[in-house]
Length: 229
Image (cartoon, rainbow, N blue to C red; front, side):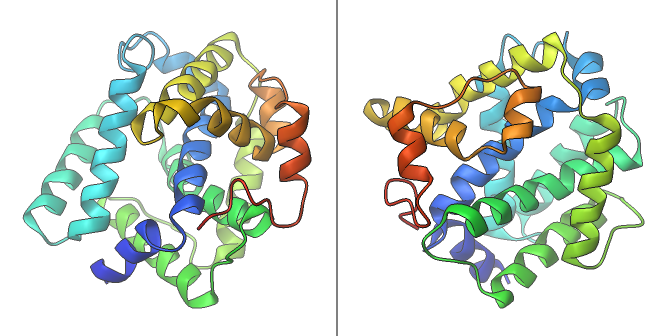
């Protein structure tokens, strides 16, 4: 399974998962009660880039080495330790887990030239369900429609505009591209993220629209600038 999930993330769909995962991180800044509770933590404000880098590295180790490897077990232990004292309940954890794979799926369906196959979607779902089980989560949905319903219902209850969320979203948008995007292309990449972000999420986070020419490119069925999967 490790080689398959690694090929999924870093093979022909790499742009889907790069943009989709970055958008997932930003989307979570719209969950008002979590953002306001955690806002004062240094890792969320003054060390935004370092926190993003640690999150990316932990996920990469699970994807590339697998759950049962030494690196994978260490990554899981870090996840458990980091979240042990987070003021969140089971529904919060299920939502965060869901968003890490639903946002790439949304982006792929709406914007990618190369669409995920049903087998690949099932592989992705299985991987993240395993993450949830390893984190001790219970009552995880079994199907993609169930996960999507969970996300919709949770956001209807919990997504709201806050000053803290707006600031963190801007910081995340600024810093997330520094993880993998070459310096000279970061502005365009950020604009592409804004253009392909769900409008309702962008509004909640107080983020402006992308430049007109970027919106025009991404309005095409297969936007050539952002879908080189």
